[in-house]
Length: 284
Length: 254
Image (cartoon, rainbow over all chains, first blue to last red; front, side, top):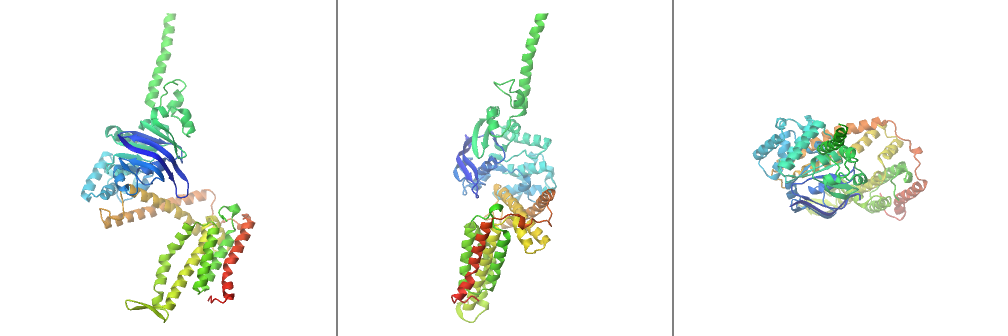
């Protein structure tokens, strides 16, 4: 079943700058989709359409079964959560708890219900201890998790994230990647996120959309697209380090992720060892 | 006549002096007709200078609440010739005309300043202000304010989007007006705190690239287009000469 369907989407900014041109793709329920492209490719512009923050200049966007329009914005925002790139913009209440309660209260929940939902959301991300803290006193990684809690508390069907891992340190990134994986693989949530790093796309997504200059230049399985080095080069992206290193040795099925790289190296070592063993046998 | 872009631009000093001259003339005028003609010519000049009609309309409409309130009560406080009555309060002809004059003066001033500001870069505005001997600190403060306004506006837009994505609506919010007001206040508070921090970063980045508030480029070395300067001066003189022309034609201008 389709979670998102985008057909011929074009968007032009007020000053006449084209943001998107005839973008078409679809996302199945439960997919984890990476929207990739260099800076200025139109990633954020595309993602904002999924939350009705921008409305198409032409074409249609259907998210969670609802066509994006000004009228349907509230319905769509209940079903599609949006995590902004900069948590500083998203977290604005005087306490973390109040900020996470913001969405449920707007949905019509009472304060008591909203508080209980917010506590549960904070707990699910392991940040319940931050509930009474002022957001200004949190680290960037903590703010990012608070922003995510504020989105997840609304129980969206689809989670859209704009560069979710940007600006995070190694620990914060691993932590957030674990949360995103869990939401997608264990909870079955459809996840769409933007990134320009192939490593992140490889680690988190099963499908990838590549944008360049506002156009969708490729869409398909992540492991297929990320091994097409020519396509990546044309789109201003670079293959993962694993792919770059091992492509000459495994041109038929180049590895993308670290796990695949380890397996490929093991296979290559096995092959190398076999002729050595055979040579040893002849000598003996 | 697109005046943006330094090489093809009109000297900002010419635009500033013209704007100030128009304002002085408008303040001295008391004739509705002359002011209306002056406004019409200024609108034409603005469009000719490449000011978008929407931008001009927006700038004129922004002053309407302020000038409108001032003008609104003029018919009730001055003059003797009663022309209408409203719940026992009488409005006069002289007051109504003065209200119209007041509105037209404001519109003329705003239109003249729009020609200056909408076609001049921030640095050029600074250059022009320094030329007419506005103190350097004041010019620097004004330019910083202009820069910070765009920072503030960008931030405001991002906060608004983040609130909208979590279903925040000002009208008919299920949590009530109090909740809406409180969250709008939080947004404004965040806006000022974060803009202050962002402003500091902007300032540091300017200083790191050699910015000094007391060093403003010399307009003489900027090489503005001679033809455009001449054309603008001719048009400016034409616009301003409408006042003596109408005086010669027998219209009462004062």
